[in-house]
Image (cartoon, rainbow, N blue to C red; front, side, top):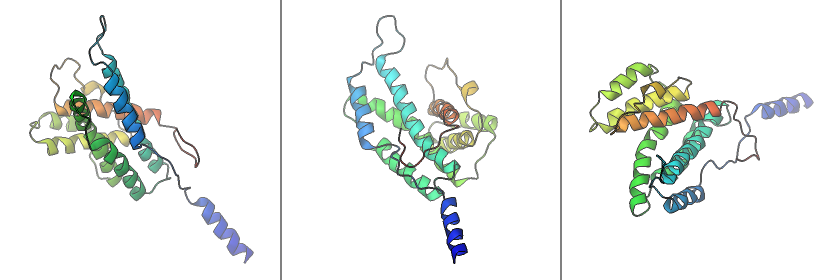
Length: 212
């Protein structure tokens, strides 16, 4: 009997510990929106980038990191695929639904479009079966007409999933001198943000009770 109890205790210890961890919530989103609403998007004299644009970049990084923490913990065995998808859904509902009024609404709408690839790529990674030939995928994506949004997103999501899986992208494919970048270019920029975020999360792991 003692042996059976010991086996059960050992099996219980081997189970991945469940986490109660809030990756992103409505309050966090609302605070960012309020900060952006108060920021100026006109560059100060002598400056190329406005305060608002700098904050918007930090805002994007914050969302990207929060989402990829879910993926990283899935990779660490702390979440099942189903749990990771549910947590991804929870964040997506906050980030991708609703817009503030006025000019900020247009800015956030554009941000939501670029973040489509973040959520789609993470789902594709969790489901598996994605292509990993980055060079071919970028060439294919650039050849798709902008009107074919779903097809272009599918290609970009493949690239993003490969990056989450450890592939390198997309700095050398981002065209800095393009005055009017396509949506595919915007997605490559977001995937580069994802790539940097995954590098920063290389040693990331949450213990129950921790928060950040």
